[in-house]
Length: 187
Image (cartoon, rainbow, N blue to C red; front, side):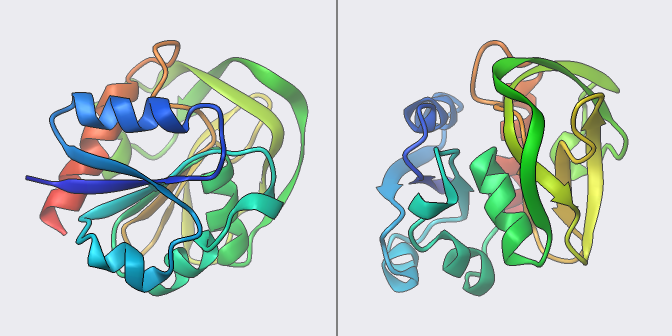
């Protein structure tokens, strides 16, 4: 059975991510972001999901996980942003703060977005967002208020999405999570 660790970055939806993944029939554990990379590996995960959170000041060891661990990684909201920063991209203030529905246009239906319609409605906060794509990443989705709604590393199984696939307000959220779990299973 596939095993995933949800890294808690103190976001209000971290427990929802854990539950959504568990409800998809996957062994899942919600863990602190202060675990060392070795402590993460001792749990033998097949992949990591980096949760959202309030600020970059509280991401613990997440950048170390992204740099050092050879595991599939999905970053959600703040997790997406910290992946971008780790690889040399930029994060800035968004045009629209607070949580709201956003229409997301899928421009590259890569493996993480496989089976998702070209346009979906998603629940997201854009108080902060990825403002410059890092080198070796491909943009997968955009919206009218955010040019980089989703991205993927070109050679590693590392993905980021600005929106929250774990909430009921997001269309095809379970499809995205199932796609990530399949990537974890095949890695």
